[in-house]
Amino acid sequence: MDTLERLAKVATRSRLVEFVFAGGLPIIGYCLAIATVSELEAIWLMMLVTGLTGFHILAFNDACFKPGRNIRNLLGMHIVGLGMLYVVVWQQGHHAAVIALALMVVNWDLYAWAGKRHWFPSILHHCIGGALHVGAGYLFASSDWRSAAMYGLYFGLAMAGAAMHHEAIDIDEDRDGGYRTGAVRFGMRWWFFCGAIPMTVAHLILTREGTIFETTMVSAFLCYGILLVLFAARGINHQHAMVFRMCCRITYGIAGAVYLYLRVRGL
Image (cartoon, rainbow, N blue to C red; front, side, top):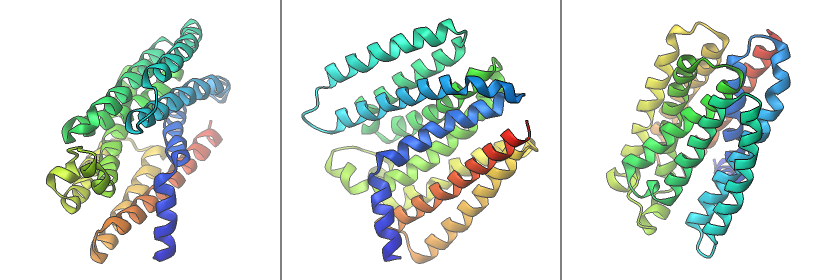
């Protein structure tokens, strides 16, 4: 377990891991929407614009939480660049996707600026963010808002549950920073286990799908449940919670990769 804890500590501090996961969600959303292999040609534009949007979100988040960073200049530089790119994408006909991306920027910037300070806005921002990440990718390939909203709800609830696990890990840092996250307000262990509630509801939404996506995600959720029981039996503390989150990220990362492979292969 000591080796796993060291690896989990490194993964917890890695922005690359967060960027990969955030960038993977629009790709999954895009692949959920397409019907033919020829539609994959436009995925590169989607990956470019969502990747740069994600870079802005991470940079602005760091600017808000790290003293000495000039937030105003940073925000201005990123917004101008993103605005120009959004205009190009809008002219390509991806109107709904651009709206989703703009809302994503607003959502996460508000979270970094003020939303993290209280537990309910924090979870709400994560839920909205998860929905918009997948929705933006989906709407790049389809104008079906209803399906985009359904998949967005699934990922939004899943991200909210993951955020609750994350807040349990960051309880000491958040308490020292004056943030009233759920873990600080209600207790680390209680909040950690409550994260399973939105995760469970999210996967119940998929029970009517009957698709490869449902099979891969529900399989990952079953592994998640087994991991939760095993770590609960060992006792949840800061180190165990970090290892748990790392194992869950690996599990869902594999599930996402398997889905993308099977989806593209089946086109």
